[in-house]
Length: 387
Image (cartoon, rainbow, N blue to C red; front, side, top):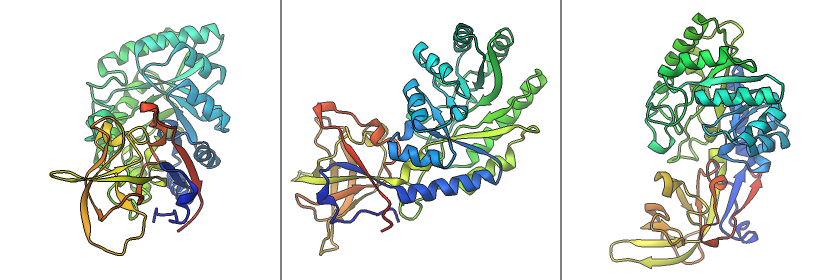
């Protein structure tokens, strides 16, 4: 179960706040690593999911690498002892300053997303009189069947190099004195629950792996990205994703060359279920057609419902004598109509001062928080409690 906070603990903190179950995080990391090692797969953690210092420290302790999408994420990863030789740097818009940061730290690999980026990287490598390692991110034009804002592998998306530009990319690399092509990179989206989609990704990766071999480029790594989803509807029943089934798909369908490494970039699946947002009911407002429960957490603290129409399970922490339930729209205090966490949630009759818990917010929760409306910056706390 992911419920790990005692009602008696809550008054010690000012709501709203994030509360992380490090015990669950530890179990999740252990499971993921065990299943990956069965196939000699390598895991990198996507810092964009959550950069809480205690969470980063625990992830690093498992020997997991880092997937970064900004210069500050690279700096943060290194500050938390992620080895530079386990850091990938992805992103469609790497700035000159970020590229310099990556080169100075001698990171493992740049995931390159455009032809012009190859040229810029080569110029900066020459400036620093060094060679850099790159993996070409190929846009496989695969529909991940997820929300359009977190789909990254279709032709209409901004990510990756399209098929018709691959030969040009190879030509640029072969004419560049300071770029060493070591691999291919794919990432098709996030919150993917249909594992059949990954079979299609394997077929695409197999094709391009063989294509580059025919072009006399035997690649060291295949980076298949991440995107494995979590169960937002039943977080207590399915608190740890099925990493066994996930990795088994690639073990069965990916055709690697001798000595070729397979890498993954996991974020949500590692940290999503370990985080909960604790909030307090400010007011109960009876509307003409619905009842509103106005809470002190807002879209500034958790933007996913407003941005992605994400559905998080919400439960009451305050003990109630009755089991009768009322239907509420759970809304925040921000001056935006989009500031709603749930259009319809059945809970025991609420009153001012009741505590609620919004589940499964360990990924893209705290890290995306803002101070819009000049709100206080939300705090976070951790626990190893097992209850």
